[in-house]
Length: 144
Image 1 (cartoon, rainbow, N blue to C red):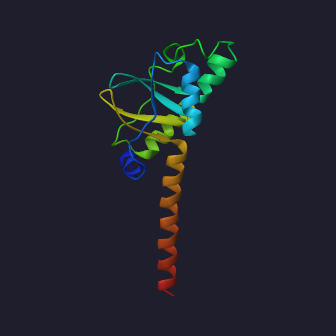
Image 2 (image 1 turned 90 degrees about the vertical axis):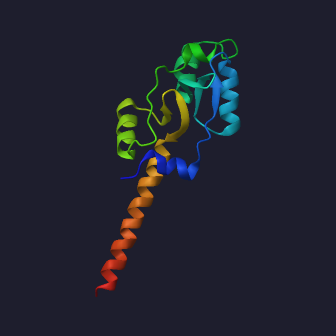
Image 3 (image 1 turned 60 degrees about the vertical axis):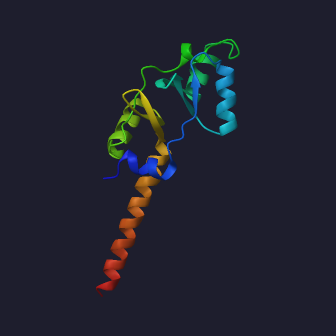
């Protein structure tokens, strides 16, 4: 069963971050520039929360707050669900499904090692299934 480590090895550990004292407007601009749906909120070297597109929609727009005046730290999700580098993808998928989240920071002892998305898990599982299909196809055709 593949682990988070296998995804991080292929995609790398680069994670877009922002500090809690940044404004929601700054966070939204950064997310838009990088074409991503989430930022990990940091305090120094420590991961302290996550800020997502849903936070913008639910906690800013729908609540009528001004994104240029609202600090990320007041609307981020904290504590956040996290995975570890040795977490199995099935465990991560289960956590993400039960919490209805699409991004899972990989954090150990406050240190940020990467982030995986539901799309990363889907792609990994799809590749694994495709490899199994190809193996079975070769096996069946070699034994005719």
